[in-house]
Length: 441
Image 1 (cartoon, rainbow, N blue to C red):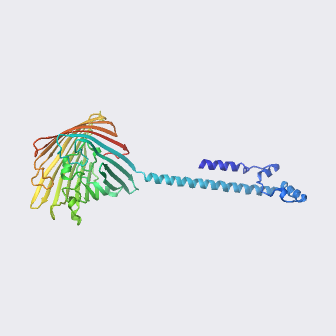
Image 2 (image 1 turned 90 degrees about the vertical axis):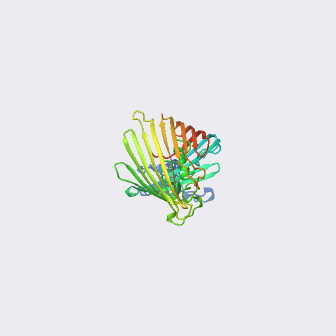
């Protein structure tokens, strides 16, 4: 638009004299635009009048020429000002439009997890919503991640999960930016920050399926719900964060140890409350340790005033050789214990896992995982789980790039209430396209 306007202005300026030029007398008539008149043969002008007019035009005084020149220069300046104003207005509108569109265009990524699975038995006790659950091809999930800073106060993040059965809103929450006193607030639907695995998504897991302790205590989707979270970063020489949240306890897929789908929220006593302590210690220039403590309390569906309490601890120990920064060895472990009131009784059980993952090079990694869960008699949540359960898993991963991963995984499961173990083999493909936030330590 700007170039067209400039060329038009240049063409019109060719009809005008420079501001500091003195025109020869014989060129003044060319500089003055002629006023349209009727054809001579249509108007009968006496020859004496015509001659007088021509003589007056050709004999303008110096004062008249200067006045005419000034008028022409003023017209040219006004036209140039109008053109510049129009260009500035157009540019301002374009900048505003582009800025508005960019602000409405958050960071977005799509992550697809696909698997080919084989199980030695149809009943395999897989407890995760994104776990392979039967022999054959599986779509574990197609996750869309959206996130952007709304303004200088809030950031918004959304996770949508697509499956063959529909679309699920996994997380959608706002996070404050720059609150005083090292405080931060989250509000919306989010995974609680209990432990290590629960607040994460499948593309961050080292193994194809989630540890069964998550499904046993929280539900297939992990512990999450609508609520409010406040965290505080302590001003200490080491990293120490305290997190507290209050969330709805009414979802069987996320709060099976609490109210679940059959519960009703009548007041603040029916919320699910979580308190967590997160700490990081640099033990050595090549070794870092992340250690957490978590506790939860909320009502359960077995009767009025009956409650469930879950306690947990998690450890993440990482070694990175100074001379081989692409290599790492990570030990991660998590243990949970549950106290659940039921009519005339108090049930106690525990479960956990430990895994060791060796990142050999940037492209190759392998890992081992062991899991344990105790059983209960007369447990209404898992009536079949009346004895101990052990599971061992091994995996090998190949990373062609940061945005793709292939995993081969094998496991053997020993539920002691069954005679024979359950064997499983997975071949999984993970692809990520788009901008994705960095993973937490």
